[in-house]
Amino acid sequence: MKTKESARVGIVMGSQSDLPVMQGAADSLKEFGIAYEITVVSAHRSPLRMIEYAQQAAGRGIQVIIAGAGGAAHLPGMIASATPLPVIGVPVKSSNSMDGWDSVLSILQMPKGVPVATVALNGGANAGILATQILGATDPSLRQVIADYKETMRLSVEDMAKSVENS
Image (cartoon, rainbow, N blue to C red):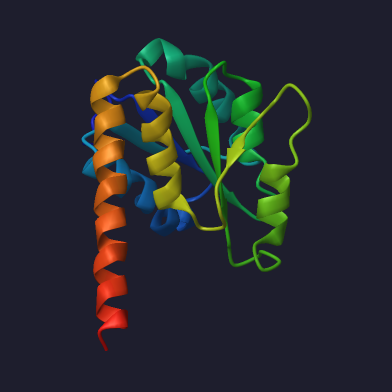
């Protein structure tokens, strides 16, 4: 559901090289039937574009922003500083990364007043699930979608347990 007109979630990344990780967020949102928009904005290479995106997102109907970045990973925090919307940070293990720890810590260690929810390194799919849960706080149909998703996971574990126990 990659449509700008009805998007409820914005997905941004610092570079196109982050797309394989951020595609996980898009895929999760697609699975749950949530419209999203996806683009590249860079905290370092296009700061004005980044600020404009963050400041205009709510006015376009965006309710949650998922921001992924590698290396110094300033994008999620800078987006959070310029919007009243909840921001989910996705640390990306990039080619210039120190095993991803630089990204994780840059997103995780935000100062008071500028919170960013942070998922695991390369955790794009979880970011999409968390965005759905945030939207589900006020949307009963999405809350049910998440409940069904979790029930499917529970049943899968039950099947795995039976398979292991019977081998």
